[in-house]
Image (cartoon, rainbow, N blue to C red; front, side, top):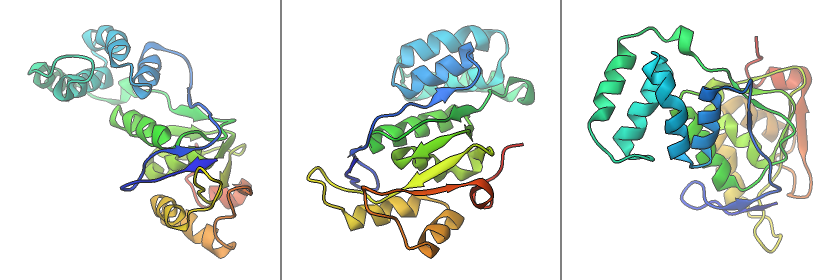
Length: 212
């Protein structure tokens, strides 16, 4: 695993893993495309849903137009956002993104992917192993829940030469919610990059919200 965090977060290399949407559907496929930076595909998937009255698709199209993601930046954002504001949201709520079997990857990629998912209204369900960069999802702990099968793996940051980088490990720790930081500190702190502190079962569900 290689981690380099710059101005909060920059490129960090870990073994690559992917976050998979739960229950394939146009909205979830749009989230996946958006997370990979394929905004044009996301818009193609969300526009029919928005036309049918899907509130979150309308909101996301507004966000894309407002920020010029995959489309020219223009005033279409206002009309889509107004349509979303005029409707209830519960019936349009997307399924959570399921995380399992994820050993990490490039920290910057994970951070930007999670940011994009969150901006699109996503929530996360950890239902298996989530190690290294994957655990950055805890920076949005209010959107995360864990199942009985969840297991989170933590360790320190190292640079390209394999040397641990304490300042970047401290910065990574700062992104975790307080209960997780306190647990790690109480158990000796983050282990070296070649080791892993695994947290699962009741201990994990005492730190991160259990899934209903």
